[in-house]
Image (cartoon, rainbow, N blue to C red; front, side, top):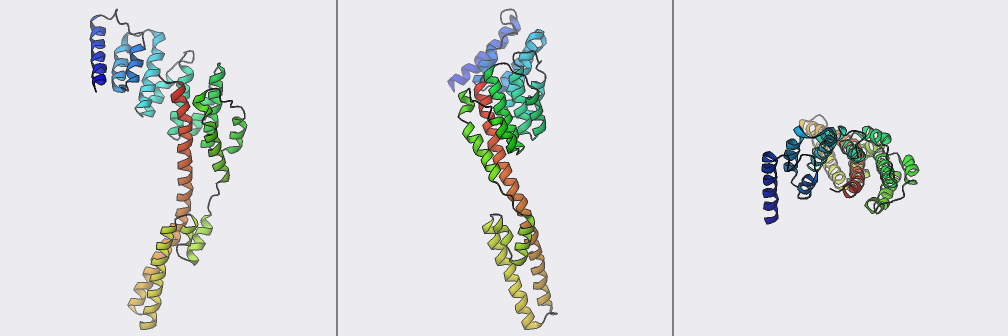
Length: 289
């Protein structure tokens, strides 16, 4: 708490000096910005960037765009972060890292093709960044569920940095899961529940819901038969329970078909989140401010 108060105090002293003596603290230095980011004072960083921008020289604009983007990234305002990253000039030393983060932002927001295009167009010169580029592309291919392309790209990833070297086995495990995933059939689920209520839900792994459907629908069927034996098929009691049986049995069949889509979506959502995490960690660690 004491350290946090010192950070706030230093921030306001800095702004005061910046106002009174602009030549003493020129708006051309990112040192204090990085200091605030290490303290996770992201909203203060945005205020400081706004103070810097009017008098910043043209070559410093790219730094402002990048730090505004990375600050929005940490605040999880990914759309705004992406817009800032896009403004970093291609001849800037910050361009490649801005593009890496812009690609991840788009991937997280579900714009996989756009994320892939950004990486495909990115030109990097250092061996480590080339390796990082290949690694990030492997993640994009898994988000596209293209395991064949993944294996092609994966063979070129050397793991030149610990930030992603340790994650390569995890990425391989995601690819294996996608290869082994067997989508359930909506036809089988529907027919199964038509013959035996709840069987389609059990087929998609929803055992509890399947048993509940079986007990409910079979109970209504038994009551319908019992009422017909007592009062005949045309009696209102029989018609009432028969109508409820048809209603719930139809719902049971439809629900079983929907459960197939739910089963598939849950699998892909879970594995996509893990892939995004595997892609995010190297960027955060390698470009740590």
